[in-house]
Image (cartoon, rainbow, N blue to C red; front, top):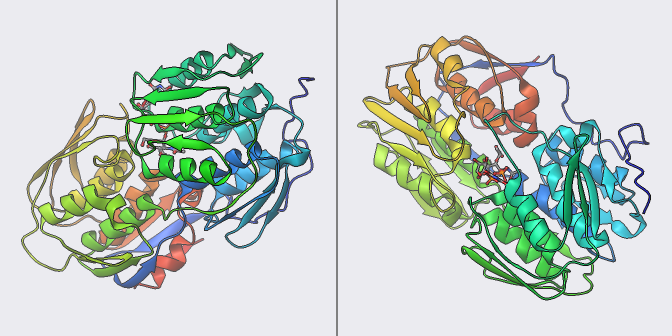
Length: 438
Ligand code: EPZ
């Protein structure tokens, strides 16, 4: 196979025309209680795993409930550059992988997002080789991919990292027993992709149990894969020689849902967050109730009522699922900044996921960061200010802070929020928020 690494100079796919104007800022006029209903979109961290998985099929796949966010539009570009025929409507993406002949991809679209590394597992699984640029993504501290590469080697691939590219080459892929030294969502997903069509049985131990891992395993099974144990820490994959395309629908986005639940609590509002799978939000529900926020389950909706008095500080320690998710640590910090008492927030997953703290302090928050821990002294109120988002969930934190603050908050770095929150301005305006992009 020739190593013709395609880059961004190629014909672009159907443009989803999403916000990507780095000059735009979000003006939030805070202090208004959120009231009403928000329906959540499909899960970003599921959609950007399901899309590369479609490359493993020998016929087209149709994926529904895909959120229209820039991470998804970037993945559509990646698959198009590889030669896949893509058809995109509102929230449905059809992927025909039959014309894909290249196992190599680099360039800005690859470096723009971390999940581009799923192309390693998918292309290795299909072509027994892959040449993919090292991933980018949010700067949360060191984000190595050693567990991914260790797993690929165990499956029979030779691994070489050279010139910013990861080169994988395998005469054949065979089953293996792989123990992950670190519970890793990405490594678990990447190894599911690589092992689905390998010869024999693969066992992934100390696997991640996130719902997005289960969603991918379910999609692969719909394509004909034989996978058992997804959602537990031991996953067994019996390789099959072929996979066919399948129709599938993404699970709802638990992090988007959690962000809006936190915003409801932070504005002392009453919000119905619908279209969720409540069990995916158990750790957040438990924490909000511990603070003194009323949360009730109602079928596929959660009712959050932050209007009751008596809310108090709590401690939070992020953990792999089903623990408290690191992706909600940042918006939760913005909320706890105005909850009476001292809250201790420890992020055990990433060593520097507190870059939102200095921005919150510009709004009057009283927070001290010591290593992986933030000590938050609740203050009566935040005051609007000009702030800058440095990553996706830092953007979510500043959105929550702007909604709860008195006065106007101007958030720079909207390209981050646009990566993970579909139609967030419309959804929030429909429940009483006053915000404007300009
Ligand atoms: C996924 O990232 C999510 N991204 C992240 O969400 C999320 O924060 C993270 O899982 C943890 O839940 C996507 O799904 C696209 P990991 P991932 O591999 O897979 C270390 C968001 O905001 N590690 O589970 O990259 C790593 O450094 C994003 O939507 C290794 O040491 O996370 C981290 O400390 C941000 N070696 C920990 O494991 C490896 O080979 C967990 O990382 C891999 C990971």
